[in-house]
Image (cartoon, rainbow, N blue to C red):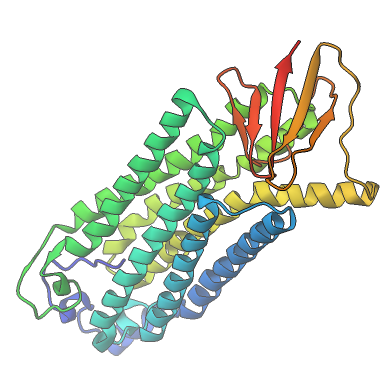
Length: 364
């Protein structure tokens, strides 16, 4: 959202002082509008492809959708709307330098930016919440409570950001209509809080990306498989990086040249789109796993050496069959993705629900 150093100033006050022809000619006159459109729509398209592959993979594996899927879809729809509104802003002059911007479009651009910013915040909240819900299904005990704390606190802090962007001027339409009588908060209050919420969401991304290390590292799996699962579920680190960069760009909301907003626009889109990509990679890993496995064998089977000290059994709960399937397995327990497996306090897998069967590990 564009705030601008105004303090109740009229639109003309936002524009530079009259320049001589020589001074005007010496200024840069590049227009980043086409580049803004290219970047935001590329990010939107790429994240949409990852999301579509995620849903295709779940449908192919006959896995039902859960709340994390629907929340992630809502996040992408919010990004799509944000991208469309950004294109509207570009058509109004966004991407140009202040001295080239058509002043008659300023109020309209600020209003559209305000709406786009709200959808951008929603996309960020929902995409991060989706990944947290996925992690939530893997946890139990105090770790589950901690993930709930992250979800709630992030939604509150970033929700306040969305609210503040609308209420920092009163009446609300004073945000874009400079002729309206009213008051606005000092710009630094909004900017500093936005920096805080962006940094907090980045920390949350990193923490959530680290949780799979604790959950999976102690499981009895082949080391290569273990590392693959951990890496796939730790892609949220990149989402955290985009949040930190976005936080560092927040000061540009009050820059004297509205051209400075372009970098913030890029990273605002990147934050949510990278989160969607990161949340989709663990599921896509299973698709790649199955393609590789089917290339080696036409049948579906699990194999392992006999271990007299440990047995595993799979029990169908699909509702269409009561047949039990049993496999003896070695000292490895394959976790093929975030499928999702429920862990007890000792780190043993005690239940998985997405494939319609139960896995129970017994001792003896």
